Length: 121
Image (cartoon, rainbow, N blue to C red):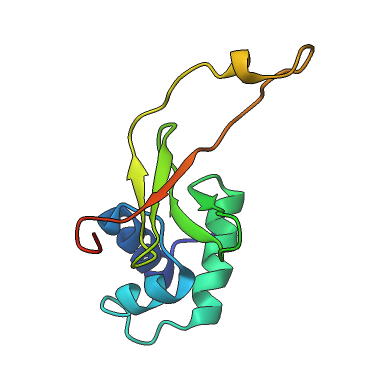
């Protein structure tokens, strides 16, 4: 387990406070409000450690750079095609096994809805 540092605490605090998936550069800018000397290399190093510990999740969208969020309950995402923001959707259609080809077993799923947020609409 990594030792707690001011930089790591600032990263975790920022991810918790924002409450939605963040790009590392956006995370850096926000966390620098807490620790001005924070660097992008430090952000990446801490994100890797936090992911290894299971404290954060990587949100991957096709053709997009990875975003990071605090680990939470099972949920899905909405990606605004206007402003590129990704927000959580606290809902799930449930069991999707009926969509599988015969003989296949579902182990996990991720659903991303695409559209425009109210500000971009």
